[in-house]
Image 1: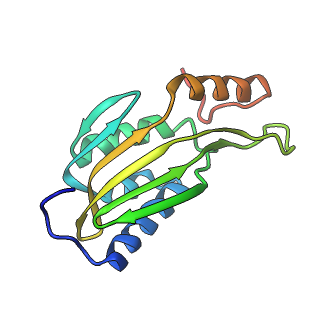
Image 2 (image 1 turned 180 degrees about the horizontal axis):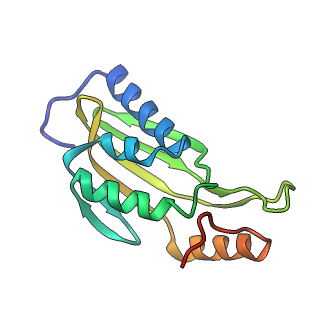
Length: 148
C-alpha cells in the first residue's frame, strides 16, 4: 500500500465507476484523462507507458481497430486507494449468434484523488488473447477500421 492518504471509499468507487463507464463507451480519450499527468500504466504486452498523454496515444492506437470489444466486469475489490477488478475482454459473435469470444484480464488501479488514478496494471495472457482474437477472426470478425 502507498503512504499517501486514503481517500473515502465513496470517492474511490465513483472514480472506478467513471473509469469503467469511459471504457464501456469506447471513450478512450476520456478514459486516459482519468489518469494523473504522471501516471504509469503497466501493460503486460506493451510494457510501461508513462504519462497521461502517452497513455492516451497508446490506448487510442490499440482500441481504434477494436471498437466492437466489450469489457464486462466479473468482480471488483476495493481496499483503501486500490481497486482490483476482472474485466473480460469480449468480442461479439460476428455471425450474430451467441458464441462467446473472450479472454480474462486483471486490472489493478491506484487512486490518487481528484477522480484520477496514478497507476494501472493490466495482467492477462497475451497468447490467450491472440488465440481468442484469431478464433473470432476465423468466425468472420473484422477490425474497424481495417488494420494496415
